[in-house]
Every structure is written in C-alpha cells, then in structure tokens.
Amino acid sequence: QVQLVESGGGLVQAGGSLSLSCTASGSIWTIDVMGWYRQAPGKQRELVARISFYGKTDYADSVKGRFTISRDNAKTTVYLQMNNPKPEDAAVYYCYAARAMGWGSGDYWGQGTQVTVSS
Image (tube, rainbow, N blue to C red):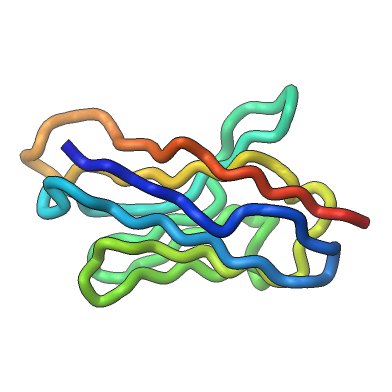
C-alpha cells in the first residue's frame, strides 16, 4: 500500500503563485506515474499534470505554460508549481500515484487540498 499526503493548498491571488507538494510513503517501489487531478464544484475530476518515474511530463492544455510539475530524486515527492493562477483553477487538488506494471491495478489517491483563487 502507498499513502499520499498533500500540502500547500490555500488562498492565492490571481496572477500570484502557489506550490503544492505530495509525499508518498509505504510501498513506493510499486508506483510509477505521479500527478495531480482537480475537481471543482459541479465538475468532473480532471487531470492537471503528471510525471513519470523517468521524468516525462504531461499537462492539461488549460495549465500549460503556467503550472510546472516536478519530482524529487527519491521519486517520493511530487510538486506542482502554480504560476499565474486564474479563478478557474480553483478546485480541490488531488495527488495520485499509478501503480507500475506488474504491481496490480488501481491508483492511489491523496485526501485532496483546496486551492482558492481570488480575482
């Protein structure tokens, strides 16, 4: 099992910056991709950004050029640097970790951290 603990959410002014972090513990050798989803009220959960074990990144079009995902050398912590956030970025942000091939099915999820963007 893998546990994910997020931190760094809160209130940010539009155009400012905010950083989220998520640390994995437990059977960390069983995970590959880590990343962030978000869910705003009344909307479906959507992918924000993800990063593979080897550093390959993917971003939602809506955050490209503004958000940056990174991972520490130990591959246990993933960061989301949110620059120039917009009011539409406000949501609960969830960290997730996907199992590596051969380690079963299903993803791990954090408890979520609220990001509020003031205009």
